[in-house]
Length: 151
Image (cartoon, rainbow, N blue to C red; front, side):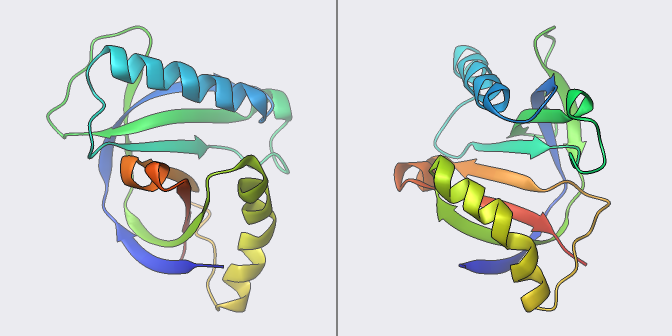
Protein backbone atom coordinates (compact mmCIF):
# COMPACT_ATOMS: atom_id res chain seq x y z
CA UNK A 1 0.00 0.00 0.00
CA UNK A 2 1.09 3.56 -0.72
CA UNK A 3 1.61 5.20 2.71
CA UNK A 4 3.39 8.30 3.99
CA UNK A 5 3.61 9.75 7.50
CA UNK A 6 2.24 13.30 7.66
CA UNK A 7 1.85 15.83 10.45
CA UNK A 8 -1.72 17.05 10.00
CA UNK A 9 -2.34 20.38 11.76
CA UNK A 10 -5.30 21.03 14.04
CA UNK A 11 -8.13 22.64 12.11
CA UNK A 12 -11.62 24.05 12.32
CA UNK A 13 -14.43 22.23 10.51
CA UNK A 14 -18.04 22.64 9.54
CA UNK A 15 -19.91 19.33 9.54
CA UNK A 16 -23.13 17.34 9.29
CA UNK A 17 -23.61 14.20 11.40
CA UNK A 18 -25.63 11.05 10.95
CA UNK A 19 -26.10 8.51 13.71
CA UNK A 20 -26.80 4.88 12.89
CA UNK A 21 -25.21 1.91 11.17
CA UNK A 22 -22.35 2.76 8.82
CA UNK A 23 -23.07 2.15 5.14
CA UNK A 24 -25.21 3.83 2.49
CA UNK A 25 -26.42 6.48 4.95
CA UNK A 26 -22.82 7.77 5.13
CA UNK A 27 -22.70 8.27 1.35
CA UNK A 28 -26.11 9.94 1.39
CA UNK A 29 -24.99 12.30 4.16
CA UNK A 30 -21.82 13.18 2.22
CA UNK A 31 -23.87 14.03 -0.88
CA UNK A 32 -26.24 16.18 1.20
CA UNK A 33 -23.26 17.90 2.82
CA UNK A 34 -21.57 18.60 -0.52
CA UNK A 35 -24.81 20.18 -1.78
CA UNK A 36 -24.91 22.41 1.32
CA UNK A 37 -21.23 23.36 0.87
CA UNK A 38 -21.80 24.33 -2.78
CA UNK A 39 -25.05 26.19 -2.06
CA UNK A 40 -23.27 28.21 0.65
CA UNK A 41 -20.22 29.00 -1.53
CA UNK A 42 -17.69 27.15 0.62
CA UNK A 43 -16.31 24.88 -2.10
CA UNK A 44 -13.25 25.95 -4.07
CA UNK A 45 -10.19 24.35 -5.66
CA UNK A 46 -8.36 24.24 -2.29
CA UNK A 47 -11.21 22.69 -0.27
CA UNK A 48 -10.55 19.68 1.95
CA UNK A 49 -13.55 17.47 2.67
CA UNK A 50 -13.38 14.80 5.37
CA UNK A 51 -15.47 11.78 6.22
CA UNK A 52 -15.07 10.75 9.84
CA UNK A 53 -16.39 7.54 11.37
CA UNK A 54 -16.40 8.66 15.00
CA UNK A 55 -17.04 5.24 16.53
CA UNK A 56 -15.65 1.73 16.16
CA UNK A 57 -18.64 -0.58 15.45
CA UNK A 58 -16.79 -3.37 17.28
CA UNK A 59 -17.27 -1.38 20.51
CA UNK A 60 -20.35 0.76 19.80
CA UNK A 61 -23.81 -0.54 18.87
CA UNK A 62 -24.48 0.15 15.16
CA UNK A 63 -27.49 2.35 15.95
CA UNK A 64 -25.20 4.63 18.03
CA UNK A 65 -22.33 4.96 15.52
CA UNK A 66 -21.67 8.55 14.42
CA UNK A 67 -20.43 9.59 10.97
CA UNK A 68 -19.48 13.18 10.15
CA UNK A 69 -19.22 14.73 6.70
CA UNK A 70 -16.88 17.72 7.18
CA UNK A 71 -15.00 20.48 5.46
CA UNK A 72 -11.94 22.29 6.75
CA UNK A 73 -12.68 26.02 7.11
CA UNK A 74 -10.60 29.06 8.10
CA UNK A 75 -10.18 29.65 11.84
CA UNK A 76 -12.22 32.86 11.65
CA UNK A 77 -15.15 31.14 9.92
CA UNK A 78 -18.52 31.39 11.61
CA UNK A 79 -21.60 29.62 10.30
CA UNK A 80 -25.09 30.27 11.58
CA UNK A 81 -27.16 27.36 10.29
CA UNK A 82 -29.35 24.66 11.78
CA UNK A 83 -28.11 22.24 9.10
CA UNK A 84 -24.44 22.14 10.14
CA UNK A 85 -22.28 22.39 13.23
CA UNK A 86 -18.82 23.79 13.86
CA UNK A 87 -16.02 21.78 15.44
CA UNK A 88 -12.29 21.14 15.58
CA UNK A 89 -9.97 18.31 14.68
CA UNK A 90 -6.86 17.68 16.76
CA UNK A 91 -3.69 17.59 14.73
CA UNK A 92 -0.94 15.06 14.98
CA UNK A 93 0.97 12.34 13.20
CA UNK A 94 -1.02 10.34 10.63
CA UNK A 95 -0.23 7.43 8.33
CA UNK A 96 -1.78 8.56 5.04
CA UNK A 97 -2.89 5.87 2.61
CA UNK A 98 -3.61 7.09 -0.94
CA UNK A 99 -6.15 4.79 -2.60
CA UNK A 100 -8.40 4.71 -5.65
CA UNK A 101 -11.71 6.48 -4.97
CA UNK A 102 -13.94 3.44 -5.42
CA UNK A 103 -16.15 1.60 -2.95
CA UNK A 104 -14.12 -1.58 -3.48
CA UNK A 105 -10.76 0.12 -2.86
CA UNK A 106 -12.03 1.88 0.26
CA UNK A 107 -13.39 -1.40 1.67
CA UNK A 108 -10.12 -3.19 0.91
CA UNK A 109 -8.11 -0.38 2.51
CA UNK A 110 -10.18 -0.55 5.70
CA UNK A 111 -9.52 -4.30 5.80
CA UNK A 112 -5.75 -3.92 5.22
CA UNK A 113 -4.60 -0.70 6.95
CA UNK A 114 -4.28 -2.09 10.47
CA UNK A 115 -2.01 -4.95 9.36
CA UNK A 116 -0.02 -2.45 7.29
CA UNK A 117 0.46 -0.26 10.39
CA UNK A 118 1.68 -3.29 12.33
CA UNK A 119 4.06 -4.29 9.52
CA UNK A 120 5.56 -0.79 9.60
CA UNK A 121 5.93 -0.76 13.39
CA UNK A 122 3.25 1.93 13.85
CA UNK A 123 0.55 2.01 16.54
CA UNK A 124 -2.94 3.40 16.09
CA UNK A 125 -3.61 6.48 18.25
CA UNK A 126 -7.08 5.57 19.50
CA UNK A 127 -7.62 9.06 20.98
CA UNK A 128 -8.23 10.49 17.48
CA UNK A 129 -10.57 9.42 14.69
CA UNK A 130 -9.47 8.04 11.34
CA UNK A 131 -10.11 10.55 8.53
CA UNK A 132 -11.16 9.90 4.96
CA UNK A 133 -9.71 12.92 3.14
CA UNK A 134 -10.89 14.26 -0.22
CA UNK A 135 -9.31 17.13 -2.12
CA UNK A 136 -10.36 18.44 -5.53
CA UNK A 137 -6.96 17.47 -6.96
CA UNK A 138 -7.21 13.89 -5.71
CA UNK A 139 -10.84 13.44 -6.73
CA UNK A 140 -10.05 14.70 -10.25
CA UNK A 141 -7.47 11.88 -10.44
CA UNK A 142 -10.00 9.39 -8.90
CA UNK A 143 -8.14 9.03 -5.57
CA UNK A 144 -8.80 9.74 -1.91
CA UNK A 145 -6.81 9.26 1.30
CA UNK A 146 -7.38 7.44 4.54
CA UNK A 147 -5.48 9.22 7.31
CA UNK A 148 -4.86 7.02 10.35
CA UNK A 149 -3.62 8.69 13.56
CA UNK A 150 -0.46 7.01 14.80
CA UNK A 151 1.75 7.19 17.87
